[in-house]
Amino acid sequence: MTNATLSLAAAPAYEGTNRLILGIVLAVVTFWLFAQTTLNVAPTMRDDLHITNSESNIAVSITALFSGIFIVVAGGLADQFGRVKLTNIGLALSILGSLLIALSPPGTAMFLMAGRIIQGISAACIMPATLALIKAYFTDKERQRALSFWSIGSWGGSGVCALFGGLVASTMGWRWIFWMSIAVAVASFLLIRGTPESKVETAERKPFDWFGLITFIVAMVAVNVVIGQGSALGWVSAKVLLLTVLFIVSAFLFLRTESRSASGFVDLTLFGNTTYSGATLSNFLLNGAAGTLLVTLTLVQQEAGLSSLQSGLLTAGYLIAILSTIRVGEKLLQKMGPRKPMLIGCWITAIGILLTTCTFLLAREYLVAASVGFTLFGIGLGLYATPSTDAALSNVPQDKAGSASGIYKMASSLGAAFGVAISAAIFTGLSHLQDLGPIADIAMGRTDNVNVRFAASMALMFNVVMVVIAIVAIAMTVPKRRQSSG
Image (tube, rainbow, N blue to C red):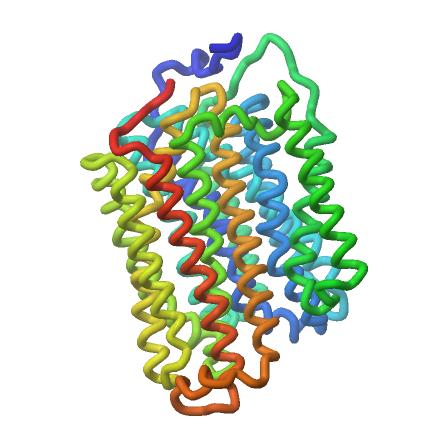
């Protein structure tokens, strides 16, 4: 143990309450429910604001990217300055970001972009700070219960965001999504108010790792641009090659610096615990499967003529399933430990995504397959969520809870950002294929859109592969029996 001690001595008898859990859940949904609605309502926002497709696509992905970039820094700041304080800062940023988006004037993307970036930084503050609060103020079964509700806010919010966004945009207007987000953030602040501060007191303050942060930002932005714009710019164009080199060099410098630094902003020593590593890697991969949502909803809107509200209804089964099974995952965790429910959840998720790859079916049949697929997707994630989070947080020292949860949630955000970007790149890139040969004979119904349906199938299959890799990672790293670390 280091010379660090938790400041919980100021309130040794404090135990987390239902009020605190509700406040935390509301804080979490400001990102996973409200900010993520842009995935489905982006076309409506684009038309209303008179911005380009490129600007709209950037606005969709930039929030998760900035969340992933800054979440580890925010986790460290939460440990140092206080988890309650960082949560409140995150809520204030959420209000500011939502306000900028709600007031965005037509003809410019400046307000929208600024608001989306601020929303990403807000999420970076809220997610690790609230997870660390759960670890600090809840124990044993109460902690697992709190984590289940946290998972309902994150996984459940992501499940309902498409349906919720489509419903609000089609009835009240898309700007109301962000006015509602402001109200929820205020309610969260009031519920968390009065919670004793939780932080790590250290005898000395370590210098901030600016070089590590800058190289990480450069690497992440460079690779995101390559993935998202590589097809449009040309994969062998000078710009893409330059950005690829920039990513490689920046990533090398980042890893070299962090491995040698005692005060790096990413604590690589946490990955010495294989259970934590497996939980974090599988979390990255399953969040990357969010590309399933983008590709499937785009396909049915583009080729089956569904509206954003109608396509959002396809995810209703996902929402019901995930909300119904998150607590089941908690019970399985208590009986079996984390490994089995994580593996079961991943297998069910893979089967669900596999059903969405059946784009050769007629439109009506495909909508049924996709609905069932999304329901299985939700069941799988519901079973996986709490055991994975518990496996990660139960295997790190208390004084590193903020940093550990920051890295864990960085995996969530970056997984979603890159999963969506890669899925979109595959879908867009393969949509231009003309002569598909025997593959075209498999498709039922219309043949004029076989290339688009094939492209969607391949993009969705990429998501299946990611989940299979997650299964392998869990099998290799998460032990059959529970391990814990003070």
